Image (cartoon, rainbow, N blue to C red; front, side):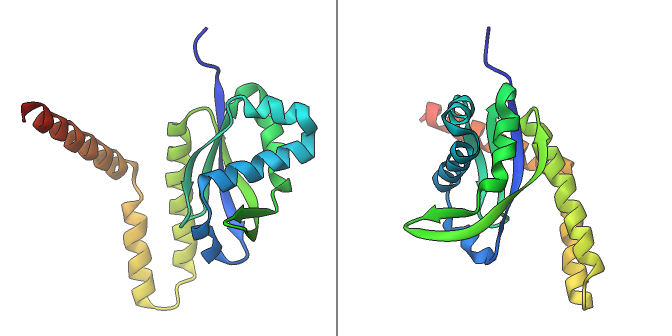
Length: 171
């Protein structure tokens, strides 16, 4: 049999001080999550979740993190996330919590959800605008949240990578 089926948990890292998110990295997130799994489910839970656990994506500016684990054990991971109360990096502890916003079977499904989620968040911000300049900036952001634009950007970057490889082989 090929690769084991996985589940992807799309989470938001909520910190008291949003600037602290810029100080965290994938290793710190992974270590804190594994520590929470061990505290919640013991050695058995940690062993089950660690088999294919990885932090696939972390955006320190938005606080979005994508965690992967085996399908059979994603509920163990999910149930341990409330026990993550801090992230530690460079001997500093940052108080935080994880908010799971989506569980998906593929990275692509999580990307699609994230585009819709971000668009809804921007629409909420739009309702709370205090002046026209803020409103205009957020409206432009909402319009830029389309899957077609994301796909075009990705295909352009792939085309640029392909042309760079051709240039290297010709040289």
